[in-house]
Length: 151
Image 1: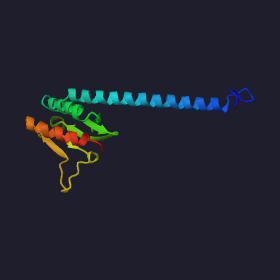
Image 2: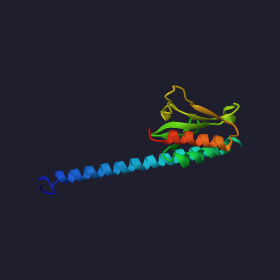
Image 3: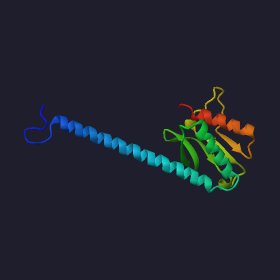
Image 4: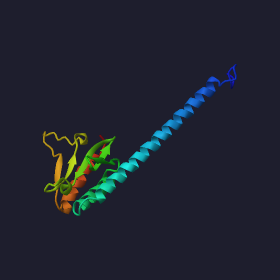
């Protein structure tokens, strides 16, 4: 096989190499866009937490730190305007500010994608957060650990 075809154009090998390089560049651009989006999503979550009222802000900050520590595979992402954490693009655990929602307490919730199913047929999908004790925070850690595990 020659480097060029009879008409002075590219050979099949050269065309294949160009197609391969184009695919590489497209994949690199896609990865960069995904990384940019992930960074923007994380910044949005941190900004939302920062603007929460006192009390709820501290709860959300602590939950954010717990997720980062025990479930680093989850990605921060706003979920109905409040902090959420996603696996494969789908939110599996989230925080709802009670003060923002104008309800009695804040909530730690899990979505159906969390797959916390219990063989008994009954399991919690949300937990009230109102001045949790250290023992309560340990329960939160366990929930996040279960949610953050492999799907």
